[in-house]
Length: 168
Image 1 (cartoon, helix red, strand yellow):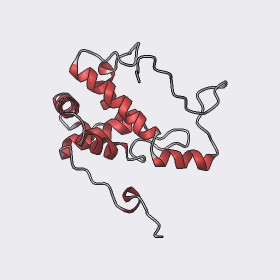
Image 2 (cartoon, helix red, strand yellow; image 1 turned 90 degrees about the vertical axis):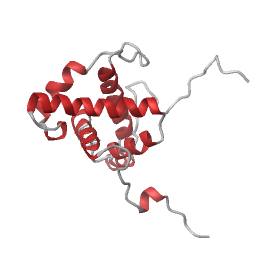
Image 3 (spheres, helix red, strand yellow; image 1 turned 30 degrees about the vertical axis):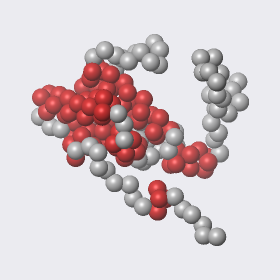
């Protein structure tokens, strides 16, 4: 029997969905939203922007448009306010643009009505999930001996909620 190795372990992932400027903006968002902390890799180290580039290439058109338009608008705001692309901004400058766009969502499905705020909320959530579910994050946790845990009284195991709406 031949040992099979997954393609993501033997080949480099290539960016192909976003334009160069859009992808660089997504990378900057990743570095601002999910920097390396407490021994965990950040979004860039976990290759979250590359994963989202792949994911969005096979996503519905509405979601693709949300991301493309959102990244373009962030670039336009950066050029208007700082005369440089969003990817070239310092973390403080990026924060000046992003802070007014960050919104509190009282419920996980309460997305903002404003398209740019909606994009920022979804990109923030997607970058966090992609980073925390990456191979790099799992390897860092394994090296440090940490386990997944949702608080002092949690068992550390995932659970599947019961959905009473699902029929046979």
